[in-house]
Picture (tube, rainbow, N blue to C red):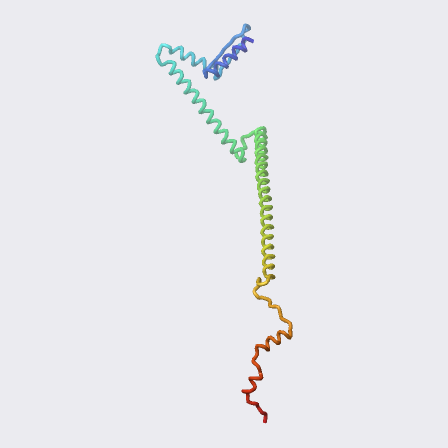
Length: 208
């Protein structure tokens, strides 16, 4: 229990102080317990170099510089390895360079491809359904606009027909015919000259 508490304290110290911590514990029975946030061996080597060069003024700085150089070299190697693995994986995804793969690796690659294809199809179907829904809404909107325009056209046609049936509304005006009436006849004769006076000036014509 005390050993676990000591390991926990070492972990908390490394996190809270952002320090490089290495802990080595031997039990009463000689069992080894160790903890390090980086590497026990690397931390011990760093400690040895720092202690051996304590007489020099820049021994600690040199030890730190050497440590960070080694750490950066390790990170560069990891980056190079990851880049190469990604390049090989891309080739394998394209079906290239498969001769070096074992049966287990081929099965794993097949599973990755199937999962990738499934996600691609799911995304494609999602986009297709969204496009179909948009087109259906657009179709309903166009249909409503078409019905509205047809109603307006029919309304305008009915209005034009009503205007043409009204008096004075058409190109030609219908004049009601007057029935023959004696009063109209006398009114017309009253406007004509009197024949009693006109006959005095006329010379009678004789047929030979």
